[in-house]
Length: 122
Image (cartoon, rainbow, N blue to C red):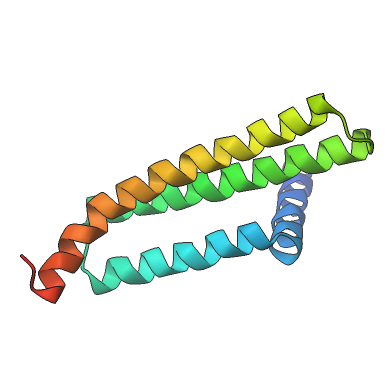
């Protein structure tokens, strides 16, 4: 049983390594996540706000990984262009876009008031 879980864990780590190595959007998400974490420390956001930011980061990275997996699976199954394949890829990308936009709004709600205080507007 433990051997099976170890194998699954190794596969997951391999997948993370591949995504980081090959996917520029994932790298962008990692960089923006790092900025959010650093910004959180510098702006002294609350523990609850940090939990929200960390949750958003985790979900965003997971959705980007799933989006990549869907695109790679489709490409492996069918190399030719079709409207159905385009639609599947577009909808998969839309899921990430919807989440990213929502996460941006939440981050603005958390960070902008603190930035305004820091620069003396409030």
